[in-house]
Length: 268
Length: 194
Image 1 (cartoon, rainbow over the protein chains, first blue to last red):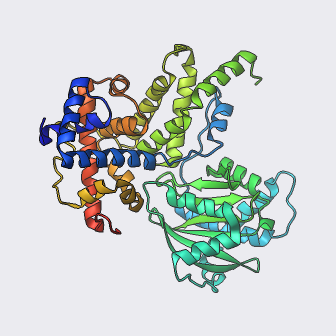
Image 2: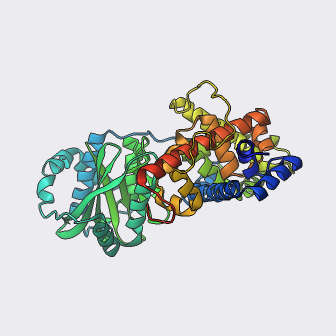
């Protein structure tokens, strides 16, 4: 066997799928040819390293529990997409809702709070969005992505770090940190991170647990009335709205077993 | 609606068989569909389909292979719906992984330290796999990620072993060309930083 012949057998050799005779021939050539031996060793390590890299994608923990729960039942699928403009209103509403609801006691079901929030979306969302520039007048850009991430970790803890990592780790789209700073929400200075994602600007705003009591009602109303699919993240207890095109997080609400809440939105 | 003991037992048996492979099923679906949300939908559909036909599974045979058939079919349907898996002609067979790779290039540096190289590679690895033909993605993932034998892949995809080998070698060769190109562009060199 020569070097060219070995290369033709290399793929099957890496998989241990050659018959005994051919394997022996390959082995004999490798003993006599250090260059091929080095290549084969490199290829073996490359195959292993690729497999390890591809293996690093966990499914969310509750997925299989949901499968079991729904097994045998007719499936209801949420509508797939929210228009960007509506989503933008939602961001404004979330920010407004936090402001309005800050410190308020939740009702028993969360539904009334949710209705309040939807009202805010309808009546004030665009206005909030239009005047949003004023709301972030104290926006102070981070000097670097590292500074932003460090700031994020200190202020809101693991939950939202997980959320951001989730957004950034979803394949087939380009989510990247474009900037960040702080803004005032309910009189509190909170972090704001700016991502570019799926041809949208994605703003992730973090507020404190006192404003997080709306989650159940919000997610239910969003699903029932607007077809917005909220997914509950088992790690952060945050409901995520995922962009079906890119898989990116475009909206999120949560009621925080972990400190902090993310409200994220795509801006048209 | 109340769930009877037979149904509960059947569900439990199904989930027990699924448990050792379920994360792998998800990863396969994710790599083939590329979108986390849709991959979950596809996997859920495949799981439900399999569960509905669980009575046809012969106890004692390979549950993993049986389950992958549902996942493969569902992924194919999902990607057809979004035209991600177009029907294309057959590439000429290629069994030489290095046919288009010159020696003395950055790819030599990759092979000298593949683990370090992959630390520098981000989504380019996934992108390179996504750029393969669908059948090449299938055989590559089933072999390199899932560890199926050529015979098992041939059975799953209903094609001769020789065709499996050809698709696999072709997919690997293309993947290596992409990695070599990336190494070249980023200046990855043997023993140094990228």
